[in-house]
Length: 128
Image 1 (spheres, helix red, strand yellow):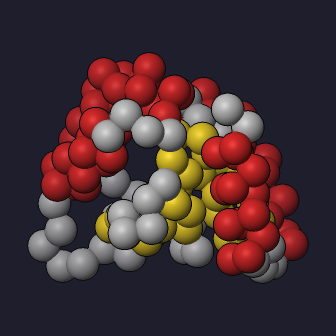
Image 2 (cartoon, helix red, strand yellow; image 1 turned 180 degrees about the vertical axis):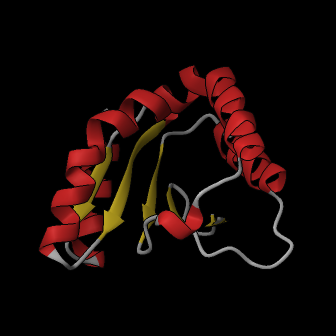
């Protein structure tokens, strides 16, 4: 996972893993975003798939990290917006929403295109 933060508070993520990537670095990047103390939105055009599954140790570290930062996640991450053009995949992502939010503390939203995703992100950030 990589995060492109140059358009903050719109943070574009990609789940394509580079050889030799380090999940600890990914969590440190996420923690840096939380450390800014400003609400933001995560956006992605490539939602994680089965190929993106983590090892048991990685899942355990991620769960511990998430538990430690759950308050900040709930307060600062307005949502993760997934851009998905295929209607069936959008339905599948939406059905995963409650479990996603229960774990991460913020909702997952689906948009059919990049422009819609940015409009939803703007609306979410202006709601506060």
